Length: 142
Ligand SMILES: Nc1ncnc2c1ncn2[C@@H]1O[C@H](COP(=O)(O)OP(=O)(O)O)[C@@H](O)[C@H]1O
Ligand SMILES: [Mg+2]
Image 1 (spheres, rainbow, N blue to C red):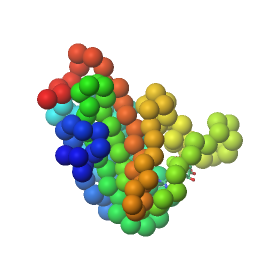
Image 2 (cartoon, protein in one colour):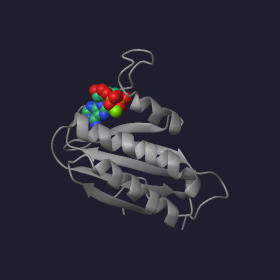
Image 3 (cartoon, helix red, strand yellow):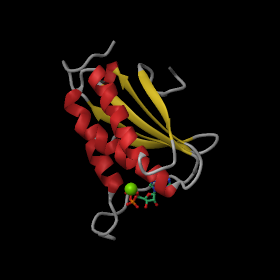
Image 4 (cartoon, helix red, strand yellow):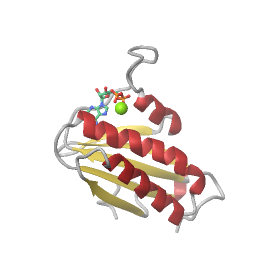
């Protein structure tokens, strides 16, 4: 499934419509995958990350398809949530304390992933991805 996710392993991907309901669709999508993998304890964090990354893609990328994926990496005991959009602007963390009205959503992604998030520029657009630690002895990996 290399095309689905560069984090080799098992995963799922879904293309989302450009509409507000897509954040909810992404939440259901990651929840289902994590239930199948018996990783229920990270569902809440994964839903927050997916919500933020999809909302950003819809709000800041403005046009073109948005694609969400989730995959798991046994060797690192992590799951990766990635969202591809068609804008080549690299998202940046806002400084804490500035512009209090903004969501600081990426700051939350940063915290939930333990800093393990990044942006990959693609031929068209980019992929923003964040890894969530599942833990040893938990979840199904094969
Ligand atoms: N998918 C994206 N495409 C382009 N720019 C983005 C994307 N995601 C985030 N950004 C940029 O990074 C900034 C910080 O994102 P975030 O912390 O989620 O704050 P907010 O979405 O509330 O503005 C955004 O204001 C935006 O400029
Ligand atoms: Mg945001």
